[in-house]
Image 1: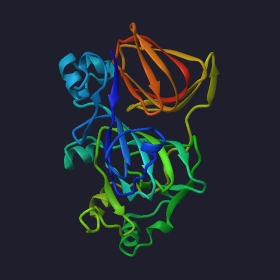
Image 2 (image 1 turned 30 degrees about the horizontal axis):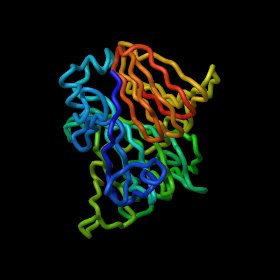
Image 3 (image 1 turned 180 degrees about the horizontal axis):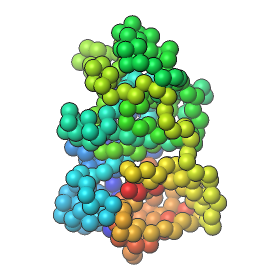
Image 4 (image 1 turned 90 degrees about the horizontal axis):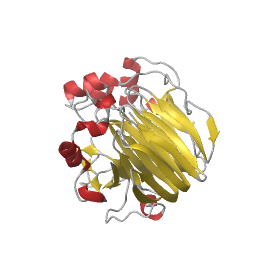
Length: 319
């Protein structure tokens, strides 16, 4: 099954205009901070744009067709496993942290949030926060939150197009202003803010902080993973491919197609294809869809062979 998805958009105050100007998305929201490109989360559902399920949410399609659409790797999962976003950070996001599965299920009633970022573009000198420079105690972390000095001990990283970051649950982090990225994450919307630059929300009041929960879940140490893709770029016939990450939650590749790319959606997992540059077409089981920058396609497990033709770049995600 080949489904083209309509994003769900978010107008968080730190967002910009690039999801409209660069990707051509149509929405009345201003700013547009996020496009939820693959989502069955209650806070932002995708709807299907093609075929017999046109107009239904992806969640409805899965409920009607059965969980077999997700693949054997999802057989023991109680909810859709991931959420994929495009994020346009015109301004700095809050400094924040996400809980792991055990804490999130106990306290928030949903999965934890491990995520990863693939930098699609950025302003010169843009940076983000990624963990701590060195290990500190929880007591020091609390003290530095209270006296507003913790930014002195966090790890500030300059970013460039093509950089990749794995943000394990418990890692303190923040996307900086001037960064456009694709985010692949667990299917969770739980965020604990530590610092928000004194900004006011739409109601004119400071946005709430979540200091005690953040203190519960933050790993006050440098990140365990290097801030780079896990694989080298591999040149193949008609395309190049780079492994960004593989873990128990998801496997993500960046693929640049020069003429054609062929692969298989087998019984183990669905395949998500997010087009980040260019245009072309995708064919599977006798059906063909035109593709352009910003398109998000869901291929159900057991769809079989599929082919993408054109001149385009994409992020491919499997479970």
